[in-house]
Image 1 (cartoon, rainbow, N blue to C red):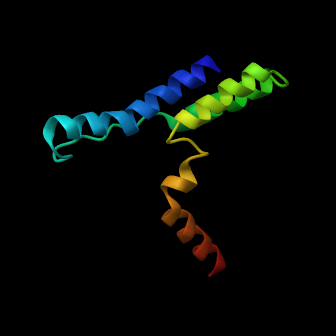
Image 2 (image 1 turned 135 degrees about the horizontal axis):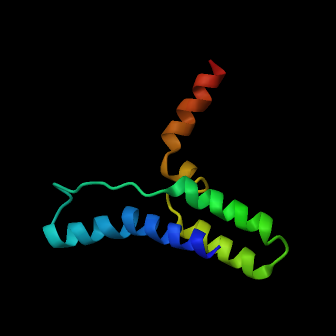
Length: 94
């Protein structure tokens, strides 16, 4: 789970902290270059850690921390991209 937290911290830094620091230094996001993290890998490592550490309270706590920090992961995807999910649902219904 420590690896999952490290990946989550990297993703959180790249998607949340880095743009704020850039905006503070430059006054706007003009010229900001987006760098994507590795969110899917973070979610997969949490799942693997949960399987290996099944029943461990520490594993649960660390996994929840990792999922909370991994803002680009599978758990956060519906919150950050609701329009894509709505388009997917309407395409299936058609």
